[in-house]
Length: 225
Length: 229
Image (tube, rainbow over all chains, first blue to last red; front, side, top):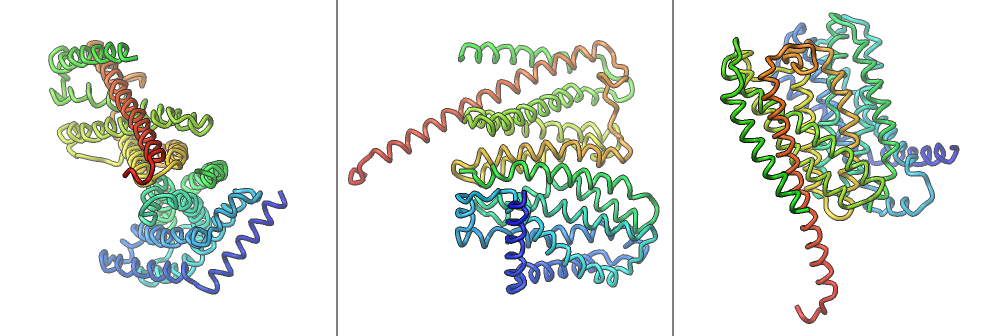
């Protein structure tokens, strides 16, 4: 077990250091999300009361699109330098690689959310009328729901033609229940009209089911020939 | 094998004609909805057939991942393709019925949304198969089929939270249905199941033959000396 966590840690720190020096993923994601926010605010131009009702949807759609930008780059570097082939012949467990990549993406998308949320608040005059601390749970669970499947499907779409377009085609249909839960939970908390508990439980269930499923199946995907 | 196929084809044709007669003439006209209700005899059997085919796809995918048997993969592909066709029939006939009865084409109700999401997942399954090449396609597709199946209960619960507008299941759901209508419905269900199995089977045979041909061509091009071409 210690070898799993060791390899995960080493891979994760390698990815974080590479990202820290290049800032490829985070910059493109940030700029993309910024563009989405600006275009949304032109398209809807809501009042503060309206924006409370639609903000949950806007925020998560922006994060979902931006996350795809980062997720698409997850494996590109490893393919270019034949790291994946080396990994396949090494005795290192496949899941530790997957966990490292998923955690790395989780950190990138969390940073994106932390930087973009103030912008949303400014542009849409947002102030939660419900229990605001629950937004933190929704953000963590929702982000993990997106990146765990996103990392997995990015690995799958590596073997396809037009891999950049393949990822959203695979990721979005499967993510529908997670998106429904995230949007409704955020909406419920912002308007304070309903409880977000059911949606948070649903997100937990989604995360547990798909984390288990991805860990169970990733070795098959990595070694598929 | 081909004799069973012929018999199945004849049975399917017979059942489909009988079912068509039953749906248009045999079954009594529904009191409040009128003749538009007759679409029910195609809508519901198509849905059952589509869901059965998706279940076949899931089983074939799991079998493929365990046994790595190419025939299981061919069956998975055939059942997914035919299932998407039947699911499309469900999604098209539903709104045609809903517009005069509910007054709206579409609503985000439990069963409608679940069917739509299933359709989306299986279309993405077919897109993945189309866009990936080589020997890893069956593995990727089988993995996606399993993840898609994991998604279904989650979609169910995420939409279950809303009020549902779809008529409660009339069969096994405590609703009452005229026995003559039930008879026609079950007849059409049998007909559609036979028809679905028939189409899926032919698609499966085409797929197996196509793979054999591709294998043969690849072998030939390997054996052929370079100068000969």
